[in-house]
Amino acid sequence: MSLLSGKKILLGISGGIAAYKTPLLVRGLIKLGAEVKVVMTPAAKEFVTPLTLATVSKNEVYSTFTATDLDNPVWNDHVALGLWADVLLIAPATSNTLSAMAHGRCNNLLLAVYLSAKCPVFVAPAMDLDMYSHPSNQNNLKTLTSFKNKILPVGEGPLASGLEGKGRMLEPQEIITSLINFFTPKLPLKDKQVLITAGPTYEAIDPVRFIGNHASGKMGFALAEVAANLGASVILISGPTAEKINHPNVKLIRVVSADAMFEKVKEHFDSVAIAIAAAAVADFKPDKVKAQKIKKEKANLSLSLKPTEDILAYMGLHKKHQYLLGFALETDNELENAKGKLQRKNLDGIVLNSLQDKGAGFSVSTNKITFIHADHSIKSFPLQSKIECAQCIYEQILAL
Image 1: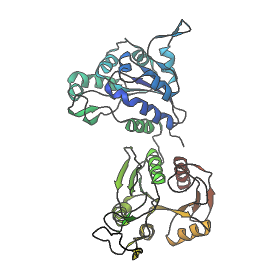
Image 2 (image 1 turned 90 degrees about the horizontal axis):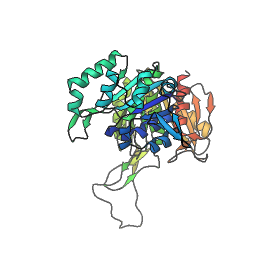
Image 3 (image 1 turned 135 degrees about the horizontal axis):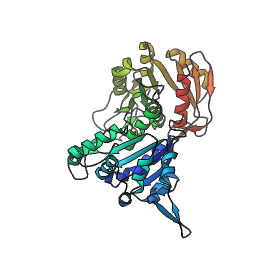
């Protein structure tokens, strides 16, 4: 389910400060299955090295019309490069490069590739806000649009000049999303909202102590990333975790306690098409939270506990049009316990993983899952990365 599998992307880099982001852009494209080759202007080498880009792309980087091989000159065929690519992406596209593209000037290899390319061209402008808004640059962008080039919007925020405003190159993930939408306009989750809970919850005992568990949030964040790449608008509600996500289709809401997670789930549940409860919500919380730190004065300490809100049961009781998926982490009688939870919580499916399986469970980047449908049909998967597990989970959901 690699969204850019087999796509050939030629990345053109011109000499702007935003070029420092291009290794991350290359890595993100390759992660989704694309093959990437890079063409740089001479000025771009002042901001990012050809060696870095050759390493991350695993391809030779081109920057001049000729190269030297064993003391013999070799022509870098700009026509062949343009014909090789499914897409030419120019990022960053500086004011100078945009002007040359608009007026047919050809004083470096990148411009020669652009002028001979037969594939679609994506342009990610990057410059200071006054330069970007200048009528000459706006006219150049209009000219390139008339050439059927696809001009990406600019970001807004702090700029290299110290000013703040429009002109930033889009972040790598935002550019990647634009390419995904171009290559796969009929993404299976396009225009769908997906709600995902992730991570643990911490239930306060006193101001410094809590009841919690070892959940890392890795599975929930992987599910959010894959859903977003499938076109969904994702609401990710996460308990305390070190995991991060940078995707324009993901809204991350961080919470701490089960009560806080429950309130956010209630706020968003009615509007989603799919809800996935991947969080390891604490089952119990202290009956009373001490206002001050409990001193270590006695050998034994007793805590009175009460159940937390059963978030998954709430969703199962109130679901209407939603597909509802739960998780079951078991240590014994795995299948029987998971099937019981499937029935009790009124789920459409449940993902079972066992702590008996090495490499599965909490705080690792791999998992071994079994998917159980509402009709009790079962599909088991081998140990694999949590991103791959997430892809398998959506394949099972979408198969319905």
